[in-house]
Length: 140
Picture 1 (tube, rainbow, N blue to C red):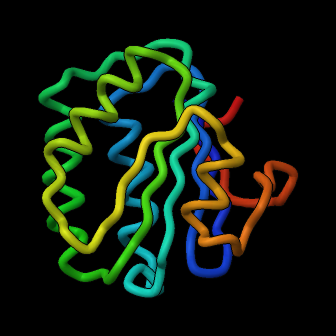
Picture 2: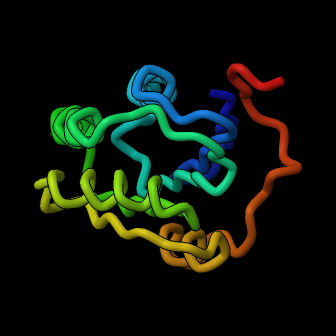
Picture 3: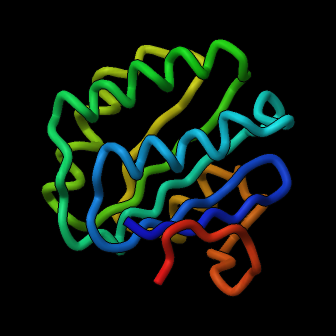
């Protein structure tokens, strides 16, 4: 699955394209967890509107929630916005949200990118900077 990550002041936006799998999603998460400034990040947006196929089970989505709980122990408050207009992806997002018990992370599902970015960044960013250079993994 191709994805692109754009790091910004106090957060990042990740846009996914094509097939959504657990392994690729996990690889994308590791890109952030290994950063020196991980504990300073305050928002994360996963734009899943470019996903065309889902090859991930509800159990794997639950596993991502558990992994994020462990990672959250070394972070502080974070707003996490998940963006999708796909019912199958939304079901996995709800599974993730229902199984994440980190009280200092505020996680919400959006169908609109602009609403997600304004909420997650607390108004610091008002539009998606997809033209901005940033690391790209598996992009065609």
